[in-house]
Image 1 (tube, one colour):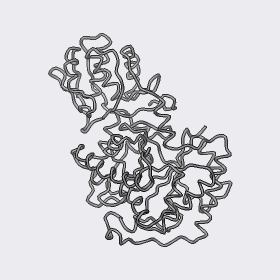
Image 2: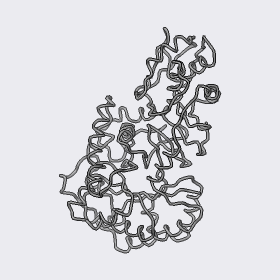
Image 3: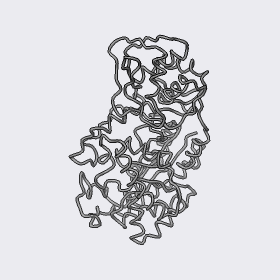
Image 4: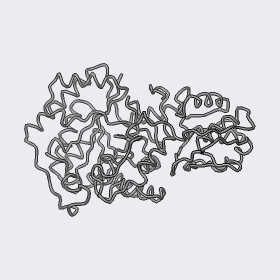
Length: 446
């Protein structure tokens, strides 16, 4: 059975007229007995009150309300202000801004928690992922960090789900046969997020394309509005949207759910505890490839590293918690090195809970990479006193997440011309040590 989540990028804080799209879609879904997930921009939540749009606020009371960032395309955007060397300074600013946005959302809609955060455009900042997790948000929607099968993945301590099917343009001229054919495609997935932008059933263009393209083109509050769509286009989209909902509801291949329900399922997975007796299985797994474990327990490479540290220090089990990757490219040795178990034990002091892993580790008189350390530690835990370390890759393959592997934010979407992407794309890849998959999901190990 395929889980379906209806996700609404609810973002246009420049036009009260565009908010009619939110009203129409929220009412339609309620009439059909379906709870959607409306990802609301914090500034829009504030504007709905300023505009006196109590009708929109009340219509959304039936639905789950989540966050679509504080200001969406308001510059500097998340990628722009988090693309700095000092991660902690970037995270503090992220939390400051996003907490304010969520405050507006909670105040407007009278809720006490949001269950997912959705980045605008391609604003996939690793800083935001860690920051939202620190703020208690479990799910990151519309992500690069999911596999093509749509099963979801843990990355930077959040569970990531991919936006799969955008419907506002599709539904403008879709026939019933077109919709049924698309359902056959959706049914092949474990999970499919169906997404839309409510403003785009009212307006002919995106609000930020005319107000925030590369820079703040207008004074806040003095916005340019795109032209309205013809009424018949809006009506056609809503008619086909109703048909889509009814076909999904009547199809036993699908189950409609929400981010909140998904977060409750993740919580029910329980704690992950690694016993020292599991060392042999971790070692056997990593001999095949440097890649997270999925069965019998879901473990990231960071989890395995922290577990090996605990075992080398004499502990018998490791309770998995928050994990971090690297802030710098991991070091790679150029030739064979010999290290000892005692040297590895002494080097454990360089690896700490709640911190980014070191990109290089001093073991005796040698410097080795983090994957080298993980392999060598497993050998030591299996009884070797001297371990041969050979040159090898220090990061896992990201072929299962090609958009992370090939990420390059500079010059894309609404980024300003001054945005360099000096850190974000590379550091996103350096967090691959935190990647892991739920035990029940079907992932192909490379």
